[in-house]
Length: 478
Ligand code: UD1
Ligand code: CA
Image (cartoon, rainbow, N blue to C red; front, side):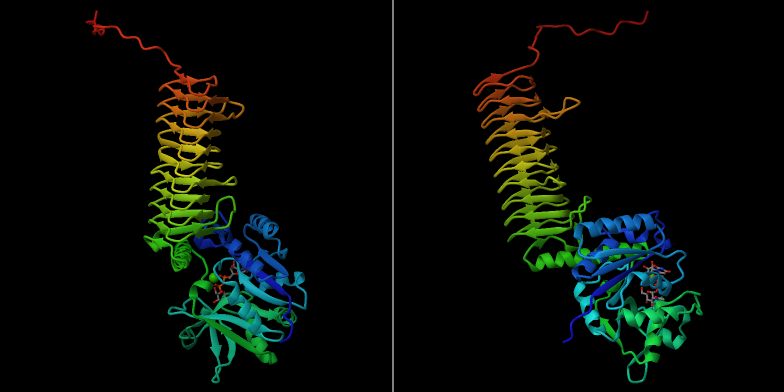
């Protein structure tokens, strides 16, 4: 075993992506909530690359800003950019990266629009290249139309790659195609790139022409053929993006089922990065049931025996053991997180926002919104209510239609409801305010002053009843 060379990753991301018909550069289109280029940069991180050079063109400022943001978060490699304007082909693209590459490394060429290549696959390709070979990642496709074909000699040795548009009918019958991914020592690649011409059907500088140059020079060329086409599939259109999204989601679903998670329908399961950048990660205990149509984003933990009803959207949250989340519930902890206690019952149609912390056996019913509030064990808010910036004690019963008025137009204030208090229906608790332990607030009250423990407080207009009262009748027109 010789020591491995430092890895330098070149990511081609200058193309326009015309078929996406979008204002967003193609490599910033999202798969599983993460821009395509984000998936590629993540693999560069996993491979412990020394350098990643992103070649930009169309939408360069946005693409560069996104890359810099990813690199500052994972920070494992030295990020560099090379602008390619105009875009004269893949060979021309890699030429732009040459000044950023050192001669001691192995160069791995990736495309910013091929998001699902696994680090282990690329590591095998790098190992195949070693110190002195050109390694091509290839795949056999039932329909190879459009791809570069791997042309072999009678002994099976790779001779060259011919692009679809330049290929003869016989060459077009070849089903082994170049994935667009190669690994090669930089000192071999550099002189080849200098010799590329654009004398071909598309008038482009083809990176794939380096294969014939290697053969002519006696440099061994290895084709590392994989069976898994998803890993090398590129995104050129919304259709391909959707297909790859489903393929990726199905793999995530299968991995969860292998751990014992019961998914009602693995084809209707989604796990994505959170919009705030939290990477997708779903950790489940034993005997978790997830009904169909659920979307999980960011970091979500679900404890043993918990059940998630149909069409829930759960993000950056921890659901404890044996909790039941009824259908159509929306939980998003964003940066603060949200948590649901053991055996709690949430929904249907409940909304838990950042900082919602619900204790054991809390009940939150339909059309109840909880934000930045703690509910202790056994507290219940079952219908049409709002709890914001509140501290709610054990066994509190919070009536239908009641709200905490936590915002005075300028500042947020806290509401404290002590243990065993009973808040009637349609109450307004104007913060800052405390309802003492075991106290009762009569329905329809607007409470502006704190109440002592054990008290009944009623704050509403007194009922007036006029017996045998005659309702006004309509006057005839004058
Ligand atoms: C390329 C390969 C082909 C392979 C296919 C796999 C060449 C000549 N051909 O073809 O053998 O089967 O990928 O998908 O390499 N790009 C730039 N600058 C350019 C041109 C392209 O950055 O000047 C980027 C594109 O944005 C894209 C990637 O390079 O991310 C591949 O370019 P694309 O035009 O899709 O190459 P193909 O013609 O598909
Ligand atoms: Ca392509």
